[in-house]
Length: 131
Image (cartoon, rainbow, N blue to C red; front, side):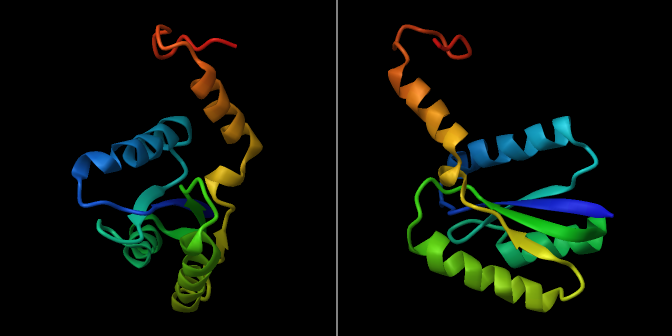
């Protein structure tokens, strides 16, 4: 059974904005090449959630989909838009279970990492973070 991941971010017209999202997808492919992954965006960029999911189902044979919101806060998009869009996606693919995961900002270890970055001395080179 193929378990696929959709990394869902807000989106921007600026193509450089997408780079961190695409970097996460590349890293997933490196660490777990058996897990198909696509990036998707709510607005201002493509593909959207429906398109990315359709590609995973049609091209990769995804039998389950996990949607991971790359959002730090629990604003309107996370509380209202995402559950509605995931329900629409589930209706479109009734035989493919779709799971909306908690937004990344809800994970304690990410908040710890952000705290460590904030406390890092500006003179410390990236990759050599202080404990």
